[in-house]
Structure formats: structure tokens, C-alpha cells
Length: 445
Image (cartoon, rainbow, N blue to C red; front, side, top):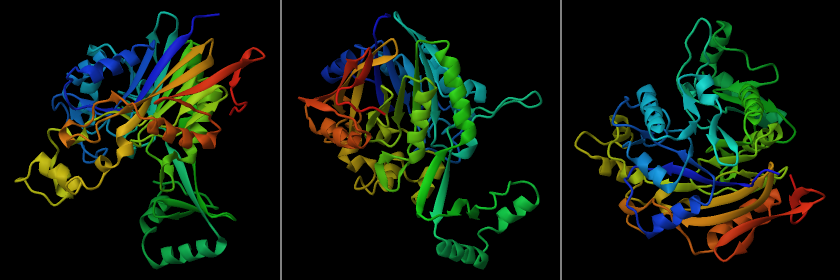
């Protein structure tokens, strides 16, 4: 048998401030350093105005000084995924500069690149006891952010590794006929009809009705369904199959804001399908982030799926600049500054992510695997300073409250996951049966 390998993962690091080392930092860094593999999602571009601001952003336009990567090194991270909804906030110049600085600081990083082959490629970390591959992707992005494939007759396009999805709405026959009548009364489909006729757009199919940009079908059970885009799903599966032949372990990092209906804590259906397909293809863990709060944990075929680990560092309120587009959204002029703009967005900090305590509470899982088998998972709660002044919020500290893990316990129940609460931390116990690891409560995906 090979030696056990220990993994640690975190959610979003939207880091814009330089690190001040204190007791909270020392405790969190010591926790992360227990692991051989330490994974983060970097949700900001890293450069000194090396790119032009995009016409569309991931929310705020995220740009941080390169020195923040030293803080990520100090915490102990050695693998970084950076495919997310902020990767191209500063267009290709910002992307290229961020990649340059990630290389300078010696991180193994994945999820973006000069073309689709680079963005989707597995990247490898050499540990004492194992070689570990990282594949990073995002389902939350503006369409033109997707990296383009290289051809013999055309250069590729820089961007992120996309995991697109198809959303289909189902209506009864009667309601679908009403929708078609509405479409005939206005010009919502006029442009798409012309595009299809002229060959610039494919027809959605005979059983699909296009209403603007939304797909509708007739169905006995009304509702909305999502599924992974087959081309992206197949491409990522092929990459996993390559990586598992070249590494002992394969990790998937997926940045996804999409949810079930209005339930932000519940991942969209396509994310569950995607994560399980990754495990089926040979991945050893799927690490999710994006919605800025915790989602449940599933153990599928004795491998962990963390649907969202929440935030690790979250400092959106101290960005130092924003382009004119941001100010214009809130009716502000050149006489206003970035503090004015952030206060306008949050209605003086009475709405938005800053007012929800659960956004500022997360977990850091530490899990151990041996010969591909999951042995145990510890869940260490952290909090990011919800009660502090807005300009000081965002650094992680270990929490002494059991409430965070208890909330995660409830979110994980639909997946049959049993989390034991031990003081403030949680534990998922695995036991051996007939030579293979099984759930301690007999359940498995």
C-alpha cells in the first residue's frame, strides 16, 4: 500500500488586502499545513492595471496587487483554480498578467489560459507520497469568456475552461400554446427567426420552442431542468481520463453560482450530474465554490463532492477602483468615489452579501485518502468577521461555534451524508467492510 495523502480545500479567495499576520492567521495556516495538497479558488485578477476593464464583469471588477499571492503562499496553498466569473474582469491583459504572477509565485494552477487546450489542461503537483492533478472549470461566466479551441487555420482564444449547461423549461400543452401566442403578438423571436433563416443560428429543434433566449418544451410535469452541455462534459471527462493515467489523484475544481430555483444553498441539477460524472470518470474529489455560502456534501462512490465550501477570504468591499460602468449602474458621476459606489450597490450596507451572516461562515475540509480510498473527513469551521467594520471583514479565523457545522449537517442530509458534530468541528467517519471503504451508516452514492 502507498502512503496516505491528506487534502485540504477552501472556497473563494476574493483577496484584495495585504496580509497582517496575527494569531488567527497562524491557526488557519497551521490547519492548512496539516495537508499535503492545499487547494484554493482565486476569485480575483492579480496585476497592476495590466488590462482594460471588460464591458461586463463578475459583479464588481476584481483586481488585486500581485503581493496578495504572497499571502496565499503564507497560508500554505500549493494548488489554485482560477476559472470563475471574475477571470476576465480585465480582459486578456488581466488574464495574462495573472497567469504570469501565479507562475512567478510557483503555484500549480488550472482553469484559464491562452486557448481551450491550456485552460482545460490538468496541472500536476508533486508531493512526497503522490502526484496530484488539478482540473478547474466554471459554469458561471459571460459567453465570450470561454477559451477558444486552436485550429490548423485559426489561433485559439484566451479564456476560462467552460462547463456550460442547458436549461429547459417544461409547460403543459395549454400553457405552451399561450406562450406561443404571446410570442406571435410581439417581436421577441423576430431576430432569432432571421438568424436561423440566414444560417447564422441553428434551429433549436422541432420539439423545442424558443422564447427569446429560453428553451421551452411540452411536458406532463411543469418545471425547469438543467443538464451539462454534452460537448463540455465529454471534453472534461476525457481530460480526467488522461489525468488519472498520469497522477495518483485527480481533483476537480468547479465554480458555480447556479442553484435550484431560488434555493441558493441547493446546487442546480446539472452540477450534481456533472460532479457524479467526474467521479465516474476517475476523479477523486470535486470541490465546488461560487455562491458565497455553504452547500451540502455528498459522498459518491466513496469519494467526496463538496458542492460549495463558501468563502475563505472575502474582501470585495475594499477594492481600490472600479470602471465608469460600475458607477453608471447606480446613477453616479465622476464626482463620486469607489466608497460611494460600493455604498450605493449595498444601499449603505443594508442589502447584498455583506448583510447575510452565512456568507461570512464556511468550512475547511481536511480529508485523507489511501490507494484512492477515502479514509476520513474533518470539517473545520471558519468565520470571516461578520461583526467587524466593513473594511476589516474578510480574513478567516477558526470558529468555536458548532452552528456552522450543524447548518452543513442539515444541507448534507439530502445526500445521505452523516456528519458527526464534535465540539465546533464536524467529522464524516468511514469504516472498512470487506476490504473497501464504506459509509459508517451504510449509505453510499
